[in-house]
Length: 368
Ligand SMILES: [Mg+2]
Image (cartoon, rainbow, N blue to C red; front, side):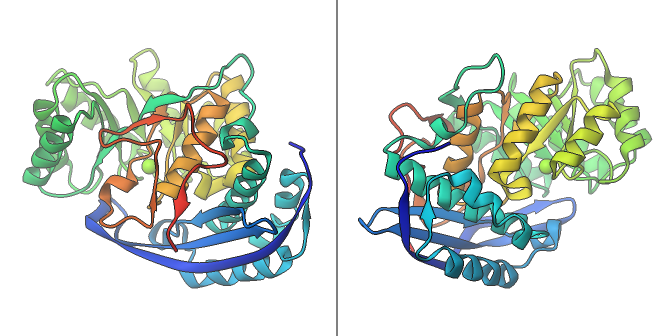
């Protein structure tokens, strides 16, 4: 990852807010608005690279104020500095962002975006394909049915199915009987769709397996089951994974895997058959290492997101496109926003990404 060196003339971090169309509810909490920290890096010729930190306090404990403070310190350090190898520049900040992975993701995104724009290449070209893979420039995201009433699940699924969505990620883990009815409602509203269940740690292993058995009675078998049990319940994950081997249902770690070390543990203990990578959990540089390790070990991959705008979502799309080893795309948060702080020319209204012709850089102009 080297190219023509340049100087960062200016760097500014600021908070950007945008309302949601409706609250984004999961088993462990909810988002009521997008309140993210954006970073803009500008070179002497006026070219800007953008980064975004999506802070999910109810999931990670990070705060918007703390992330802003960290990014302001980093911005100060970056002003006047040379960039020849963006990966090295990013690595130099990893320690300063310990415990603030969303902040690190924003910093890395902005440095990589500016670098790619300066080299006049799309961002995905900075992520070489995983072994044996090819860049994948075209794919569909799933759409999330958040925790809510039966009517909300039914009407949400109907609306999104009518728009052309064919992959549904249903949040469960608050109320098993209601969850079952919500899943049936989505299946009826969008028959034949790919179903992903995300429990956000809301079950025990035994309860999860019993719940899947109830679903089987309706001939419903999800393609993937995400984070059924608490983050540190490796035994529970391994129990479910062993039980579902050969069933066609993948067991995916999300909250359990934030770092490369977590991924190593998950793989070595055969706890899961899939991992959900999010740039907001691991940053871009470490995220690449997790993806390569998982792909080399036959672990399937999902690319997920926190409450991110089109800017960050499209950066993640480039990440997945370059590596070419992701089977599940969960980059749908822009569909829950009202009034976007950014617009992505690569993403259409039915959740289809097309990165052919994208860029330079992320190819998205942020309005802040
Ligand atoms: Mg999840």
